[in-house]
Image (cartoon, rainbow, N blue to C red; front, side, top):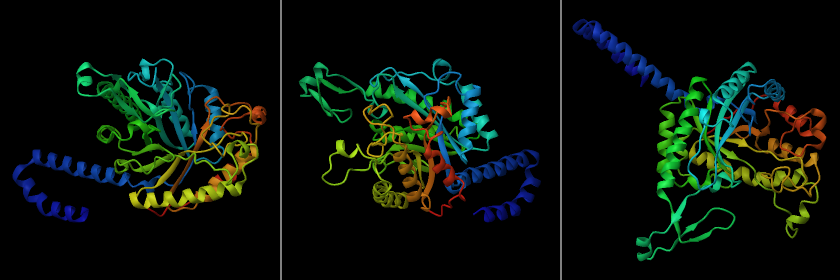
Length: 417
């Protein structure tokens, strides 16, 4: 199509310019430039241009000033030294409660990392020759998981006369009918208004800094069936940001999204649990180190499902989050933080087993795009404290050597979808 357009232009430009002069010449120049930009933008949406991601998530739970500190520069340098070629800069703001649609960001939130912090982190990443995923997230300060945000209001007298006395709430620890409550559409509308502006703000930074991949949200289960709202948000973001887009679905939700067509890359929080052997209760299984062979067997089943999803949607899959803590039983509940099971001892071998299994099972899959493991803090603990650290970060732990060896390998080549 480009060659045909070019030939057509050559045939028409000379006689037309002769007739209409300077004004039309200027218009044609603009038209040609616009066409060039359009071709460039379309080409940039080819996700194979991003290559294979040898990454880590960095800076989560950062506060104002954290990213611009000398400690942050040292932390990112140590992360890059693993052999990383990508960094996922993840940061968040918070709603006061899961049912309050108001939240603030940037200069209106003095506690979260500032725009200057984010730009400083991006500049440092560029010095380290890292490609960048920018991942803004909205949390809830009341401790409710962001996947469960929802808004309900009391039933009105008019609704009661219509026989409406409550509505089903599928989210939270105990899904069920909320007696005397119904979904608050006005609150949802306000939340979407805020969330759209929130994403547009950080999309502008991503555009200014030429970030390679922008993440639209993380594990937002309760919002995902609001398809038109998501499509509208994504269109608004694309009007600002010309790079590639992704969304971070939680494991087990990846097949449920009907708007994957709106993004360029399918991203997953790949915390797939390893079930205990048949007949063995979970509470017994977590008392022993989960073997690498068990983890590999579990992941091989997942691999087939993800390959089918990628083929169906014609999009690559990125593990934008995955990993485990260095605590015994971590592979049985890989999403759990290090302090979630204080009765379990430190077990760095199980963390090693998980890393080795994840790398071996997915590394060479043609549809698989790579990893940004969870998570590497902006303020890194001392190397001498690694032996007692129960968190996800592998700095100073045996799993660090596993990752370093794999990241030193030639970059895997993705040939599909």
